[in-house]
Length: 190
Image (cartoon, rainbow, N blue to C red):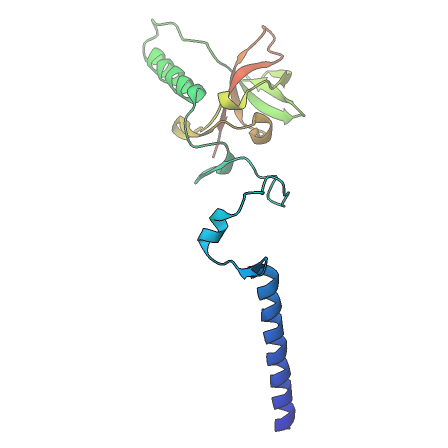
């Protein structure tokens, strides 16, 4: 019985050694030389643009927010975010002083449906408006969370980020607002 256990142990060790050697030659050897150093990696040509990987789809940047989770875009404010915050500040000041006219630069809608390149919306007065074509440029987009209107991200593809229940602030290009302007700001509830 002891001999059988020893034979099984020796067989296991042989398979383990052969497996490790196979992994070493398969994954760590490059053109006959062992390239485990970082200096070798930096000296090689970058041909990653030629090779497609499973992660190639994820070329956009993401921002992690504790309330909203992962959202697309960057954490740096763009001009659209700065202008929207300034507009909000002026609106809050105007609400405190009713003698000043309220700036109506932005129209706002609640997203009730998602289509390819457009969204179904209703106005702030719960009036269904129908479909609005999204013509937002990524460099003119921003995302805020409704809690204290805190900035979250900017510079994202609106079609990939918009969700049901979001509030969309934009400058309508016509009286009926069939399409947005290039500037779009989303406000999301946590």
